[in-house]
Image (tube, rainbow, N blue to C red; front, side):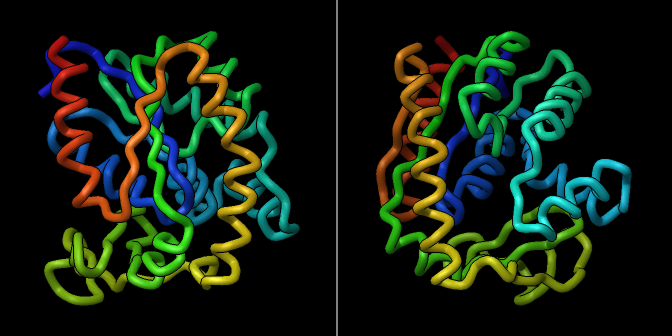
Length: 216
């Protein structure tokens, strides 16, 4: 468990293993995983006012506006209170990073550097439990029963946007979007970059880093 409050941002391309690693961090160190994507998907499924707005933008092929994403994420951080957390999917631009910095003292920004060709191959093996956002990776983090969620036993699904050609385009857009954000955090000396092809290769190094930072 954490010996102090530790608040971190995790940044990684779609399919980089960001969700899996966030889950491992929280499981091993007792923090809260705050995923902007999961919050938006859950609101869409529940058909809340926020979900209706987000669904409309997504249906039109647009990004959900900064104002909605920022307000939603900061509200969730408020709910978490005085606890350690891993922030996943936010910030996605410098304006969001500045909004976060005005509210929170971030201790570390963990970046995952995975080759794009590895990611494209990996997403073919990614399955999710949509209602909860739990992610399974065949060959690394398999469900106990093939095709079924460990907690509910409900069927797992694959995302429509996990097709190789769609993933390649998303990776290009990700680089264009996130490189300035990473550079912004690098100037503040907060970035810890982890390179590798597989989560099981990266995780031991990350665990050493976390133990060092958390117990410092």
